[in-house]
Amino acid sequence: MSTPQQPRLWRLLLACMVWSLPCFQAAAIELDLQDSQNIKTVASDLAWDLVSFYTGNRTGDVPGNLPDPYYWWEAGAFFGTLVNYWAYTGDSTYNDLTSQAILHQAGPNRDFMPANQTRTEGNDDQAFWAFTAMRAAENNFPNPPSEQPSWLALVQAVFNEQAARWDTQKCGGGLKWQIYTFNSGYTYRNAISNGCFFNIAARLARYTGNDTYAEWADKVWDWASAVGLIGPEYHVFDGTSEENNCTDLNHIEWTYNNGVFLLGAAHMWNYTNGENHWSERVNGLLRSQSTFLSTQEAYKDVLYEAACEPIASCQTDQFSFKAYLVRWMADTVKLAPFTRDTIMTRLRATAKAAAAQCVGGSTGTYCGMQWTTGRYDGTTGVGQQMAALEAVQANLVEAVAGPLTFNTGGSSPGDGAAGTETSDSSRDPRDLRPITTKDRVGAVVATVVATCGILGVSVFMVW
Image (cartoon, rainbow, N blue to C red; front, side):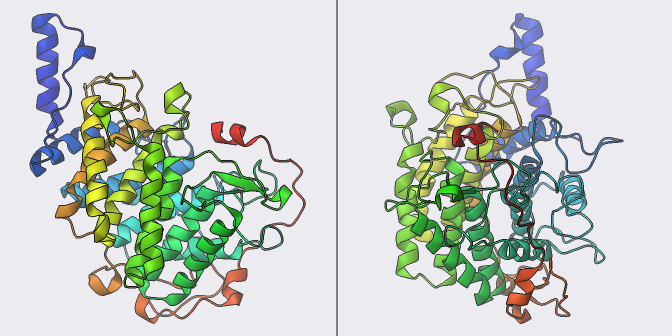
């Protein structure tokens, strides 16, 4: 395959030989945000390096899995970045690989609960694969063969199963972090799991036009606000424990928690034709991003992971969090145009800073995580590469259509009862019947009292 990064690599190698330069002194990527073709070329370089981490297409490996130390949920996010890459650049190089991975990890029940993951996956893990399927539906990513589940039906299955897990026995509602009692964190109700459910409900409401999903989105937002996961100034805090009936909060803020609620709120603003309380919520979440914006003059408005970057304590998962924030910020521009100036200012500054330190690895285009230090931090990995790629390609957002709906050209058919014991005969999302209480019962999580108490929240974050 001939790609734009290969000439750059040859130039790098030639310079190393002729001038006896060590390859780690490679020049920074030249990103021109006024030139869409340049942005696509840089994105191609970064995508090539991102896919180099993937082993699931090798003989004997499992499609959709990333090697250690990456957890299954991040593999789902990885393929969401590749769907995004295709949507922004039109380059279909990785489409077959992506489709194979998503459909394999959907599992035999078509709900992203594959047998090799179900004993360890949490609600947020399942949701990140649903995000990738939803992104495929919203961008008209090539549909699966007719005998396979549609992108939309996969998301609906996850929604139905998670609606069945909504637990009112304590805290007045909410999703637990974990699905099964035997996993540490079963009694923790975190922002990302509930934010994912809110995000999925809002996107399904807009795509299908079914008000039942919107009702759930309202319900989740109201609950998250009531227990304090979303604060009065729209800061999104990490989680709370049901052991204290959700009266205590872990006040750590992560970029992706802000982003997951931001995109859901933008979908709801769009779906409700601009209801004022949703515009206030979108703007509030953008204001609270001040936690993650550099105030250094040279890096003004560049995003950083405030909870761990300044003390260099970020772990594997956390290396990737900024990828999802910038991805969701870009979609918000299309859904809620009043956010354009604020968001694009941040995306442009972030993309320039991220690209400037993509000078690592064998190609000289592997990226580190710390974009506000003025130097390459020496790390490489899936999270770092995803985050830089998403930051760069997000600057193409104004040239693409944005998230589609069934009524605006989305072609993925659905199944409103996916993930339940019943089945819809209709494959037209406009005709989906409301989801009933019986549907929501679905699979019931065992009610045995958790044998493992919740560990310190900071330990959870490390895990």
